[in-house]
Image 1 (cartoon, rainbow, N blue to C red):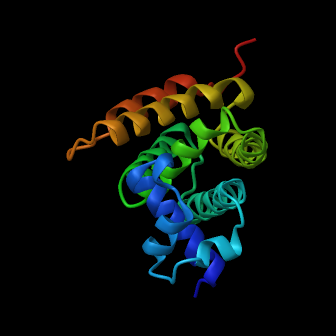
Image 2: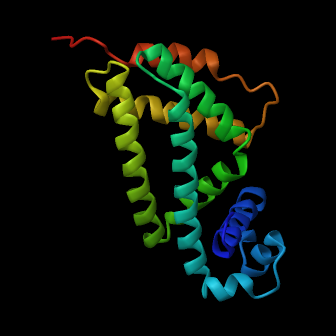
Image 3: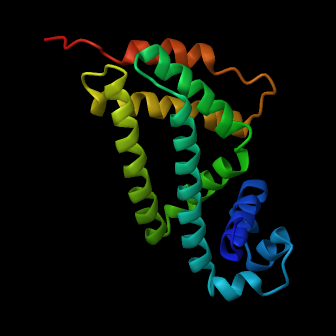
Length: 189
């Protein structure tokens, strides 16, 4: 069971995902959490404190989501990695849509808010290290070069789906074609 602080942060994620960064206020978080007025401000004295805490919670929840996916996936080949990424795309653009939208809202806010940028950079470094390991397991001989190509394409597909929702969202063809072309399983030299 989530504690009060997590309840408030998850409510803040719902506000961000549902209405964007401008809608994120202490009062909106209290309402979304169905808690008395002043609850959010008791935990997060300023908007900056709320933004920084919600950024940490987004990172925490996304890491848990990726770990959940990782426990059911064994991407030992480029094709298996592609299957895993297809499932991940469906989840982050579907069931976890608000979480993903909240992350994008925070990413944009971080452009003008250095503490958020630092938190996102640190959180992103952990995700990158994890993804590089998957790339190696899938057979990549140059994961540092290949991972950004795949990750950026994945991000673009998801962002497009979030901005222009398609009920028939089908990332399979693009991802399953791209990943085996990008991952070099043999050293070309």
